[in-house]
Amino acid sequence: MFDYSILPDDTVRAIIVALVLFAVSFVFFIIVALYTLIKYTLYSNKHKGKLKLVCDVAYFHERGKRDNQEDSLYISPMDKVDETGFVAACSDGMGGLLNGEVVSKYVTDSLGENYPYKFDAQAENAKIISGISDRIYEEYHLGAGATLVMVHIFDDYMNFYSLGDSNIILIRNNRATLLNYKQNYVTLMIRKLAEGGLDTSDAYKDTRAKGLIDFVGNLKCNVLTTSRPLRLIENDIIIVSSDGVTDSMPLNRIVNHIHLDQNAAGIARTIKYGVKSRKNPRQDNYSAVVIKMKRSFV
Amino acid sequence: MIEYYTFKHRGAADEYKDEVFLRLVPNLTVAIFNGSKLDSPKSQSLLFSEILSSEEGRNGIDYLNQTFEECLDKDSEYLILRVEQKGIESIRKGDVRAKIVRQGQISLLPNGYFGLSSDDRIICATDNFFKFLTNEGILADALVADSCNDWMDMMVRRISDQSQLKCGNLSAVTLKLNR
Image 1 (tube, rainbow over the protein chains, first blue to last red):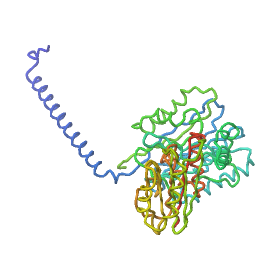
Image 2 (cartoon, rainbow over the protein chains, first blue to last red):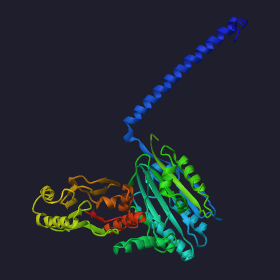
Image 3 (cartoon, one colour):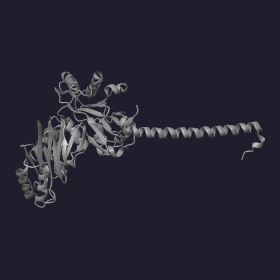
Image 4 (cartoon, rainbow over the protein chains, first blue to last red):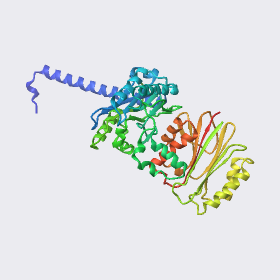
């Protein structure tokens, strides 16, 4: 193919030397890469228990078919995670009331102002949220309100706080569970019907029963909070979202859509497009913070 | 102090095939009988109750279990939990289980003696109750609830969301041990 005889001897020698050097450095590179990979795998396996559980975080914040964005998110600074833990929250302005976007933004801004939170002071943190709620009540007198879901993760443990009907979803072993219960009239009706030994189908028939019994903006609200933290494990996925997400994408559909080897950004993207693809003409605002727990040296 | 709450619901079935028994003296004993696999659950349930009232407190839980095995139909299913000074003794047969919430985790309570620490929470229930719940849901509710009553209400809400409580007999007991 090539006639090397027309090249000067010096040039041919230079090409041969260059090729030999390239081959040697390539083989050396492969050996170093293999050695590093083997060492890393052995070290990871040996120290698996000692590796820290860290949060891989992503979010989306979409308006849907609404004129205003009434969802608001809060994600705590990542530079102090080791000292104070990681906090993520989602607040959803209540439909039908005025100033939904103002109130939800006020809630998340106030959460940011109160950061950092003590991890083991759940009652104290709930009191801070209750204080935010009281201030909104004093301003609007039940004329405006919002829901709030907040998680606080420190090492392998998580506390959560909830007011209203937004979602804290835990996906573990390919199964999704809503961790917080919804504070609406359905809950009260179920309690009454169950106490009376009746079935609860009537509780779901009345659409007004979805009305909230507690929310941010209510005076002396009852913040749902964990009294002790929940233990997290590797590959747990936590989704802190507004109800716009689960209205279009129920929990089992979320699990079917995502892949467990995806990172947080991939999961957030999958859920976002999953909701979008439903093409719901009355799609509510939909926002979520997605947290995936990973083991890492960092 | 021991706090407990009992839940029993027919679940739109024609009759009760489960039964929950509580004995407060000399120790708190919780027993759940499940007769869903029996032709005449009522008579077996009465027999279970009779043995429990006659024998409980006199002999060890193993002896009680032996008596049940001798006298009851082989398809009878039950769970007996006896709260002792520093722990809990349990025996189960069939699809009646107890789960314990401890340090932010949930696990199945094994047969035999199990030491308890403060703030442990226990749920005993039939398989029909557990089948609508995930471990994570039970755990989250236990950590949020202020009382055993609240904890039960939250789990019943989860079951209701899936079955509207038209799912057959539901029997469960929640326990909280503050030491």
